[in-house]
Image 1 (cartoon, rainbow, N blue to C red):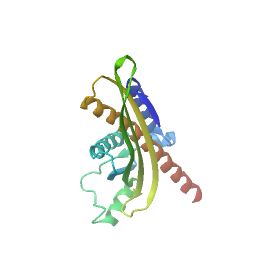
Image 2 (cartoon, rainbow, N blue to C red; image 1 turned 30 degrees about the vertical axis):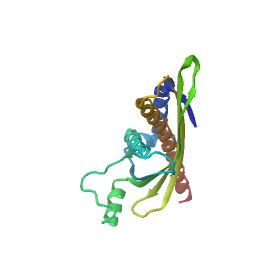
Image 3 (tube, helix red, strand yellow; image 1 turned 90 degrees about the vertical axis):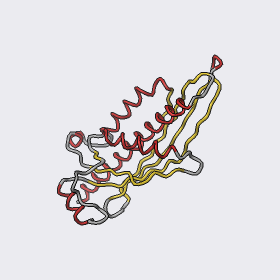
Image 4 (cartoon, rainbow, N blue to C red; image 1 turned 120 degrees about the horizontal axis):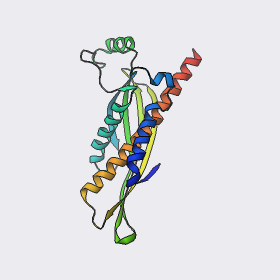
Length: 199
């Protein structure tokens, strides 16, 4: 789990994003064109987690995938629909050397707490943990998984503002997603290397 104070979030977030770009991928492959098509299928929340966390996770996951040089979240207009034309879809992605995956996410833990800080102020502590699963398309077969978590500690003074919660939630979600995405891509790359060795 990443444990960060608010002042360290910006630098660590950049480091985590760069790590995601190359995690588990051979250096030569990372220079190639986008080869993975990721589409977010569903985001589930463990009971008790606020509903707004789902929207936040979808947004931050979409942004994280868009930054990755091996991923695309949209196919060109005219691509066959995998639901109505699965054979055409398979031919389309195979011809273009695209590996399509349906992404499912489970947010398994979220907490939002306040504790006293020195000087009479308060500290907001937000933690978030999630699991990510990738399934092949159009036939649904489990292909990879990854986990990520983060804890944000932020000084807020004497009064908790809605803005404080939004910032801490965003930072925690972004870092947990980067973590899960990196481990997912490491597993995907390892699976592909294993398949090549067995051929």
